[in-house]
Image 1: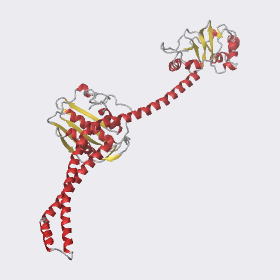
Image 2 (image 1 turned 60 degrees about the vertical axis):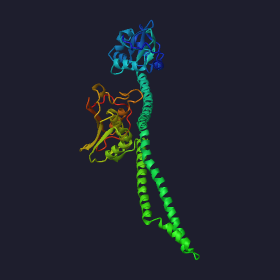
Image 3 (image 1 turned 90 degrees about the horizontal axis):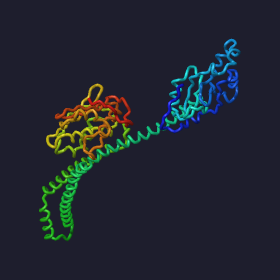
Image 4 (image 1 turned 90 degrees about the vertical axis):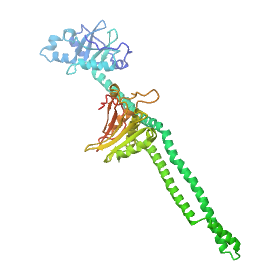
Length: 451
């Protein structure tokens, strides 16, 4: 006689206990006719079968279906009705222990139940002694309630995971930017320095022009004076002759050139600030049409301090059609790829090739370095979250994983090829026509293929 399996570690399952109906057992010697009369009582209205018990042990069940088969036969009641229920009962009933978890009980009942549904299940204690009856439909309803409750919790957990994922992506972006802050500050400081120098020099030029203007004003006052002193007039003319027209024109030309240099420096500062703002902004879902070449140039400007004086950047940028994407996210991907390439090459002789191309279906940007390459055993895990070969404290292991997810969320791909001693190439491919709404996916990629 099969019994639903239980778990030795689990306490009594409150779900099964809540389903228990306190049904008086039918003794083995009860006549079939008397058992049939029990089904007419209100207390037995929900039951499909009666428990047949002897000395607290379940022998089987007597179902309404079995009784119908008997009574529908000609002279069935007369021939069978006076016999004990054991003559027609089911000696292989559904038995569930009260400590059985709900899910295990449902699986057991579903596996052993017949068609049509003619049996309920018997509930026993841990010693297999009879406790009561359970209705199969009540068991399924309890499971449905459990599933619905689990679905609500799962939806809440999914929402929390999405929020955590978004925060994680932004944290990784800011971590990447944090490595660039000192360099960007230096990049800003350089144009800011000569802007300040030009302003100080222009102050000196204006002091000279102010002196010349004051001398001309003094001459004008003498010329219109009715009591002009010829000696004073001659002295004033002598002072003005010391300031030649050529000197004044040169001062104005110098001032104009300094204004141009100052505006150029201010524009450089503005471009750096705009790029920083674009990289650090939180509107990840903002989608627009953009040229990936523009994203490349913005990223190279942000990463300039890491690259200059140690890495040669080779640009091979083809004419590209605009693609629909989130520029902030694509910039983050390119920043990760370029930064990783810069860290992979040697201090001297390092070279990074940034190449863009397009065909009828895809727009691609590749970042290739001439570093040491990636070992095959690392290459197959390169997009796994938290995988890094950098020393502790120098890498989170999230940059490439998040970059892979961003590419997938755009309907694109991020592929990598590498050869030891030669270098590594990452290729970002985006569809010319949007195939997906860019968003941060809620799970890290598993088993990403490095091609």
